[in-house]
Length: 174
Image (cartoon, rainbow, N blue to C red):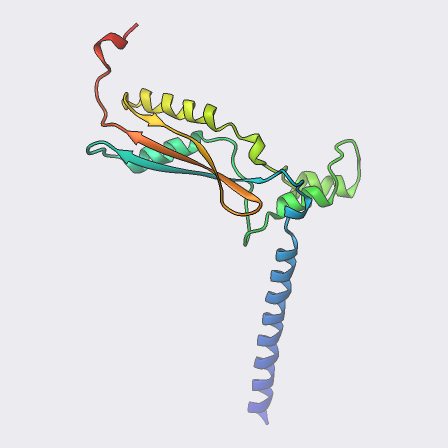
């Protein structure tokens, strides 16, 4: 009798935890902000950095992390593919002049969406190339392009042609 009771309690505990997980997963899946986007809008999904080196370049990992810090804007954070902060922003309304609980929730938990139109890949590429020049990579080239990853998410790709560090050319001093 005691064994049966323990098994029943264990089964009920697993059932409650599995149902809780399913309910939380369903809530997170329904918190997608894609339905609030207009037809020609897309979220910015982030940038990828690809190195194409000429020769042996040491410290690529440090260079990459330094360059990633310079890339702006930062994309919205995602949880299981959805953007709950952006969803809260849209659901609670975007009127900044309103007061109340919804405005407090939007300001506390909501995040303004970062759209692909907010990015400026050419300007970012120039900034990154200037940083590489200052680090001693005088013959480096930075190219930017926008690639569509999925229906509503786009990302920038920044391929680098990275030369070996060297002294600047003789005629480049002012």
